Image (cartoon, rainbow, N blue to C red; front, side, top):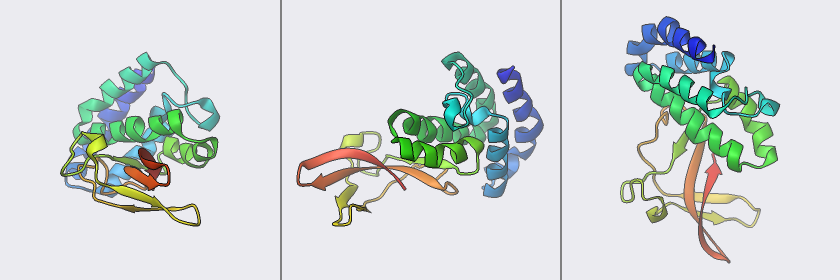
Length: 176
C-alpha cells in the first residue's frame, strides 16, 4: 500500500509539476515535499516517536523506487530522507531529534547535505572546511561546499568540517 501511495502521488501530483521544478520553481518543490510528508513518505524509516512510520527497509526501498521516476524530485526526496533525516535518526542527540525530526518528516523543514568540496569531491577526509570552537561553546565554520542537492531551497543543512581544538583535528557534522 505504501508503494501504491508513492506511485499515485508521483503520477497525480509530481509529474504534472515536473517542468516547473526543473525550471527551479522552488515553491512547487517545497509544496510537493510538504505533501510527501503529509502522506508519510518522508518518514518511512523514521521512528514513530518523532512522527515517522517506522516501516522496514523493503518498504523504504519501494517508496524510493517509485519516487525515483520523478527525475529531480526523486533526487530531492533522496537527499532529504537519506542524507538529512537518516543521519539525524542514527547519530543525532535526543534534543536534536525532538527539535528537527517532526518538521523534517512533515516536509515543513527541508534538508540538504553539504559534504563535497572542489578539491576533495567525495573524499570527505580531504575536506578543507574547518570548525573552530568559540569560548561560548559555539563553532565558527569556514570553507566552501558544492554540489549540494536541494541547496537552493533547503532550511537545514548537514555540514561536514574538520574541528580544530585542543584535542587536535577530527571530522564531524554540524546542523546549520
